[in-house]
Image 1 (cartoon, rainbow, N blue to C red):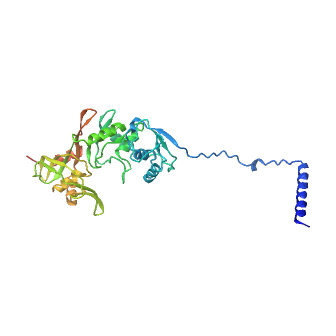
Image 2 (image 1 turned 90 degrees about the vertical axis):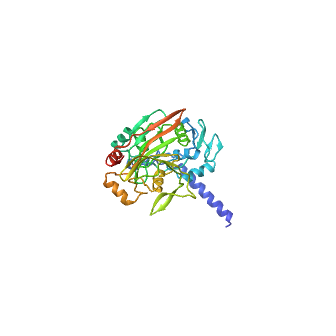
Image 3 (image 1 turned 30 degrees about the horizontal axis):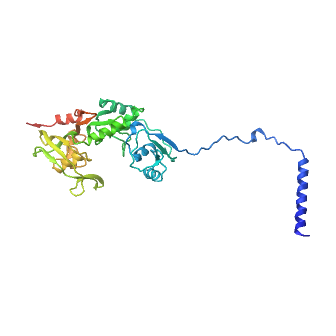
Length: 355
């Protein structure tokens, strides 16, 4: 039998079987209620591109900084990658990370996978009360605080809450951003902006030559230099004894200027008024130690024995207070003053003044 005959035979048999099955009545199978298949209403949505319009408060902000705020849990490297690849566009045009956004711009935001964020932890009520009571001036553009000692300006290593996080938790519907920073153990004037426009203007004002910042510092020993300008350049992130410190570095250090003026001599210490023309990290502390008179109670730049002695006398922290900031803002001269903290007042009362 040829292959063709075999194929024709099989095809005829298949057609016969189909015709027989077609004449049979169809059987309806009724599923038991407990065995019926479950209905599934799951829908899968693909991430969508978003288009957002820049509001006036964000006018002038760098694009990379803006995206870091939008995509809070996305690594910085990923932010730069989506900019350079053209996934992020402004008004349909390609941009660079340093591009400044303008009010009214339309920004294309690609779908970016982010880790689910946990609800922010609420600061203790006592801490929120402490922060709100520290406000000494409030306007539509800014808040001025007499920052309490021991409270960092923002959360970080070993600090669950900083002043800015506490403020945002206490007043969640408002915009707040730090204009500048002071050390955790330093008390005194701290300015917080209430809009992006005010933030940029206040930061520019702080960098202006007409701005004056003055601190009160109690330094070790009898100061015999009169009014002294210290312009020793400073370098950050120098490792010493396993910790990061700031050091005087005439070669690679950044320009730094502090002006020390003695106010009151005490037995074993001198109260100084310190004006700074630059705002380097730990500037006053390092310059004071450079002059041979470290700040009283400084546990980083003073000898351990001296710090222990001050603690024994009741000074539980470094004696440094941001007393005054003067700057030009919105066409007028603003002067912000913070009274000396009570713990520092008590430390002075315990000393023997020298007339």
